Length: 241
Ligand SMILES: C[S@@+](CC[C@H](N)C(=O)[O-])C[C@H]1O[C@@H](n2cnc3c(N)ncnc32)[C@H](O)[C@@H]1O
Image 1: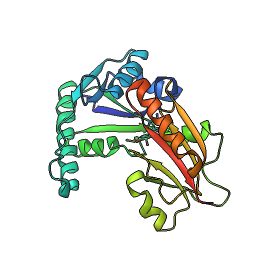
Image 2 (image 1 turned 120 degrees about the horizontal axis):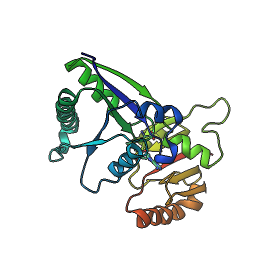
Image 3 (image 1 turned 90 degrees about the vertical axis):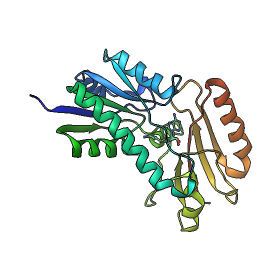
Image 4 (image 1 turned 135 degrees about the vertical axis):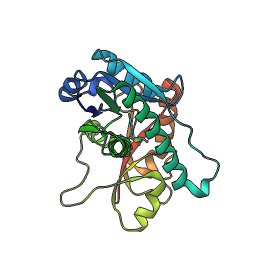
């Protein structure tokens, strides 16, 4: 019997960014496993569109509820949630076998738990897996603004909006921020920002300039994106003066 195989495929910021390598890999898969957060989950629709483009059926697996009741025990809540996901995927893989694909938004190496989930699955059952890259949000941001993410000889630090101010206090001067919410740019008026929302979608918005000059424009652009499609995801680069 051939071992069950999982292919973790980065799909970039949507169907038009699926690389030739990922498309070819997808066509070797028997089915796509996709977490379904709700019936109108926008990311599920994108995964369906990508899978359909390549003639691969989608198995939607209801995403387990995350316990948000005890914010004091965030780590345990996330760990339990990941375990419940692993349980659900294990059931599917054991029942179906063959070659399954996970379609990861952007690139699997950035703020995505699929690789960790599949590592856990491989501890529980015989499983081969590989990972193919996709275009990530920071890459697309840089391309849209026609820029390099760092000046010569300067590192770029990638972090979350939640950690931004701590990381700046710790000395970071060239920071790419993901997992937004509403950007808190207080105290950064003289910094430069290159901002983008819904990159790769028709609702895409871009703003660049000195933070104090463009902060309101960013708020307006983000609301515009949200109004158009019902969601807004943003990423931005902040650079000290
Ligand atoms: C869970 S992370 C997934 C990132 C993804 N793995 C990648 O490679 O970019 C989601 C975050 O990525 C960024 N992001 C994802 N899609 C985006 C888009 N189309 N436009 C702007 N930012 C995006 C946002 O910061 C969002 O909060």
